[in-house]
Length: 192
Image 1 (cartoon, helix red, strand yellow):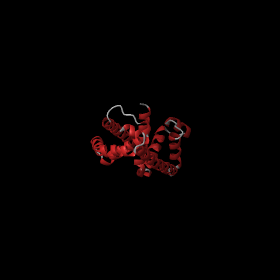
Image 2 (cartoon, rainbow, N blue to C red):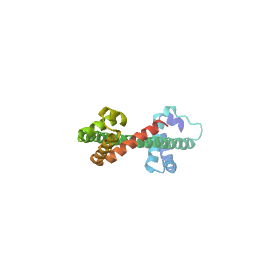
Image 3 (cartoon, rainbow, N blue to C red):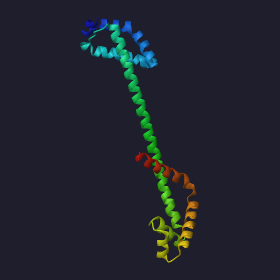
């Protein structure tokens, strides 16, 4: 039978197909638990068998060969399906992360603009104290000396500036928290 298939005898091939197709599909179904996938695996096996008939060699019984081939094809199908699922999950996670990051970037830009406006709304002396401490990273004592005021006045001006900014930015607290959490998450993962 194998020799006649190798020589391209369609009747022999059709006989083998009709004889084993149903049992091979049942066997594949036991492994895959999916009728459509099982039929697809068996049909692919017969398709490949016909396509590569010139190299068709069977050292055991034809029945054993076909069942072993279906078994291996089912395992390959499962492996491929798992890889595909992993890729889809990874792709979805990556894309959802990009969407979240883009959304957070827009919110962060809005937040920066809102902070700039809130700082501009501070009274001039308070704004000067705030800018020197937060943006120029000067110490309270240094600011007091530069402006010719007491350290206690610098502390009061900073306290009032921070209170004004908290009020002005109260709607952005969730964004600020999310940005801080993302920064902490990044540093935690990069230092592992």
